[in-house]
Length: 610
Image (cartoon, rainbow, N blue to C red):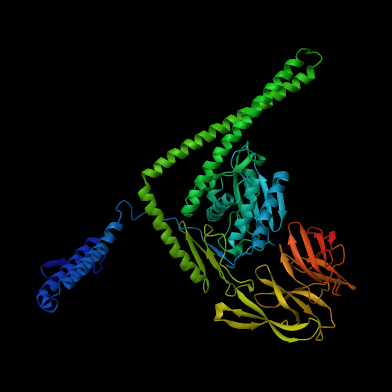
């Protein structure tokens, strides 16, 4: 075994050739420091002849002391970092990562649309037990008397177009806020837990088979259960479980079974864990207060019904039928009281369990904290690697020892995201469509507001390569985005487009090809506004103009009940649409107010003349 000589100190070289022992590092560094000290001492005699100034010597002593302290601290760090309580065999739980089609920031309108989709779904489910609209279907399967868990099953329809996991989370957020009375902030936390939970279900059928009721399983296709990690497999291939439990003081007498969605360790971030603990405690306190109120109401109702029975029994022959009905009513009240009492006992038991769990957690705090930190560090690295590899190859995510590979289309830009990351996507300009920067190149101005344009795209992923759309009959000076992969322009037929009809045209952002065209003629300088997946523009009908609302495929969805001025601006406010502008002949400005639902004219406002 070779020896390393540092003056009088002998250090053995690590037999493996790898300096991985913390004790070895400390000894090596201390020897090196000692060598520096001795060397400096030997040369001090010569130095003192040159630097007789005592302040200079004091400065060097201070500097050397600082250097020795710093080196010693760095040498000891590896030893301090080692925790013998953490086993090398500690099981790591990788976080669930999702491959998204785009990381473009969702617009405020899109976020509102997605949450409202969930809210609308909750209204219908509470009323009829099911809902189907906007690419989402929801059905409630819940019977407390049946063995097994009940669930709200959220199905993503084949025609849905979700490109980012956060869009799905926002739909769930809206649904939870209305169906179970969570505030939006808490609903977002619970929604992320539900997404994690369902990503696990996708990989492990044992997590739901034998646990949910037969009625729930009868509604689920095993190939679609849960949610896939890749956006390519969401539409038409997703059935999200929202596990339910009985709760007498919540809408529909149900609540999310939070114990079920938090049972499995998923690697969700610590902030969400803390928030879920708080949500659990807040809900339990609120439920307890509501149960106390309900208990008082039932007791009062029972007393009043008892007094009614006493009066009826004064003439049993005459009131025989009413007496039986009143007795049944009392029995029903007593059953409700029993249910309330049972739920209060469950809440008390849950609170006790939670306290015991907290005490247990505190006793193992050091180990748990270290495990969590190590797990999070590993996850961050794998997420970065996964994101980087997505651009050119496949995205691989390993969870619970199972490898899931999502094949990536080379023409599609993807992004890997954990659902507990910020709800908002990376900020990008509005003209970034399908991960390309789109712009209009004005070829020439003709007259009367007519332009001849070309649509071009810059591809940042391909060294800023330029690409021109083969569709060149574009009028107007602007376009608007439609969803995440299309744009709407004003198009025309023929070459002399100032004399031809103009129509709305949808162009695919990926290949820049014409995708759809409206059958209706539009004003060649019409403003174009997209809202909730619809396009608003001014439709020409004979010599008059109307406000038109088009579907994504440019079929006409609705037209205003009254003509408008084509020289108007469109403003949305709540359930109303305001059109402000002049007639074009120098007349007085008028403001037309339309109902946003059916585009019927509500009133016309005329500002006073000067």
